[in-house]
Length: 64
Image 1: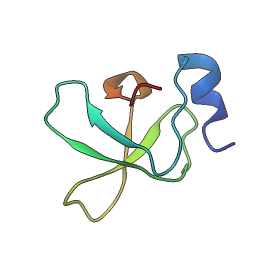
Image 2: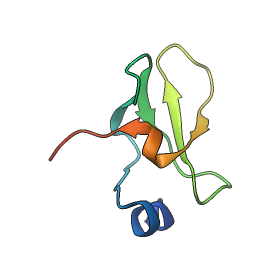
Image 3: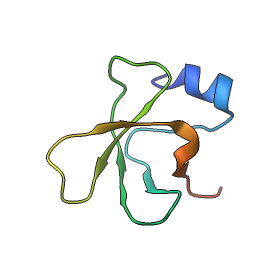
């Protein structure tokens, strides 16, 4: 799994391709594949060229 560490330690289950927003609601984007840091979720925000690392608890995930 791409984000096992994040799932285990932060209790969230990010999946590549999932749409998320920042906690303040100012940005939204799509979760990208895992990169080098285990404790961050990489998000390609709308209009951006590259994905950036975000703390898992700074994102709002879709409810099940």
